[in-house]
Length: 294
Image (tube, rainbow, N blue to C red; front, side, top):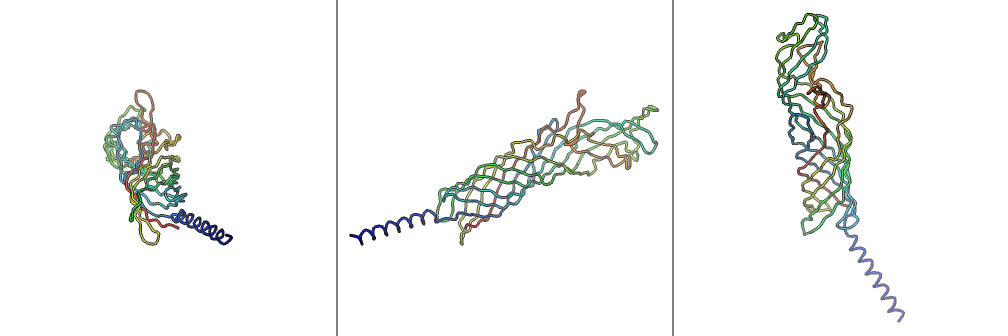
């Protein structure tokens, strides 16, 4: 009787161990490296003009902790590059300037047509997402992940690309209007390449990803899927400034200075308005990752 009890207890303990073993027979820690590509844009809410999305992408490192065979918490570091082209219609403006040639103050006037500018931003995104995998077969597992991302701005810049500029100078001292002296900065000019840095704010985004997790030898996996990121907040800084879009360059009058759309304003109907109301990050495309479990 005593031996029977020992045998029953031993079998029960062995069964429990096998059950726990079966429940824990999956990698709890998963590390990955990969890349993504698609539309990675800076969505502008414009007062005037149009914007166009551009292809871009990035690379990332990932870590997922699995609470069970199907559910995990995913995080990591994504280095993402966003860009956008903005095209304005016709913009006119003026500002006070100083002519070094004749040592005199004057009013610099400009008319800019078809101005196009490229804006770009480089972000370090930190995702926090719930990972769910299902419908497992011998060779693959379907997965989906949803959550959010915090984006830390690393770098940003703008670059003027194309456009046609017409300028003139009004000298109130002798009431003289000059509009065809190119070496003094007055006349018709193509837009010259000009670029400078832009400072953006932190971004907060909703994130979703889904696809197939392919099984490879030695606890390795290949993720192939699609992703969507939707920015929730305005990343445009409030203190961007209200400069004229085109500025006179007293040191080199033929080489006009373009302030950039985000730093500029335009007077319309007696009011000074910025060209951009707000900017949100947006991304969607394809994603590939190589992962290994432990």
